[in-house]
Length: 373
Image (tube, rainbow, N blue to C red):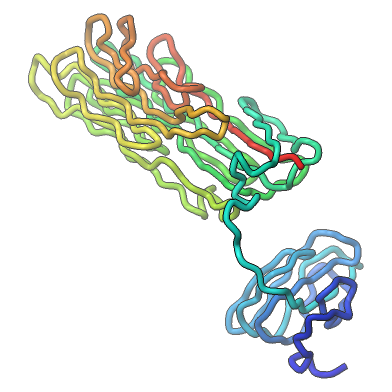
């Protein structure tokens, strides 16, 4: 066989797949084998004869790792390939020549609602397994929401719970089943951070807890509101990245990272109120005005993934001291009766509303839109 680097980059093949050139194969006498096979930059694939899972590293001046049984673009030359795979498997290396293509507008990969594909939406509110419907494309659009933060009920005003973080995925690759974990609500009168919701390996963290009696709000996907009575600060919002659950596939977009509001007043007639929790699309407000005006919760994220535009991950409003309608929920909606902490609401599934003495925070949520042929 001629030297590897002299193999012509032809459009034809010679391997078991079209447009592939077979280079060679090794036997996995142990699960970890190093193959002294060099090559130039290009597209490659390593296939398991038994179609089992494994991983390989193309080692040169830099190292690129790829899973077995997939095509990968190796952007550098290499001098060896280190392979981890089941014992007694045979692994074959192919160099691949593919034709050039371009993106066309309104392709199915973007999944527009008018693409001609039929689609269906699964609303997941409990942990378990998501099953891809029959005859579906192996890519879906997903919204993953963490649970809202709780709020410490307190008669001088509890801070609003922060809204849960929102992760959106477009054309996310899935198999027939995907493990899911949906975070439950935080019980009433509890300032804990909301729980984390998982869709496979992608996860969205919960909102920070709203605190009481001049204590700062808790940190979370969006910070909780600071407590009333004494000056307080809102909690900090956390921005997720690819290394903290956001992932890299499916064009991930994160909505969150906003701070909660606090109580800056020291005036005796104004200090008995709390800051609003941060929301997925904006920070919570500081408390302003008199005894009966806690800070507004931050706005949530509006999405039409369900087929109707709904708002997810709004922050809970800050509690106040006394009076009908004193305690406020997101977007200016007042609560009809006196509450001791923050109360959310006014949006689908109440993701991220703060708890009061009788209301838990909003639980997590997963929406999956699949596309059928």
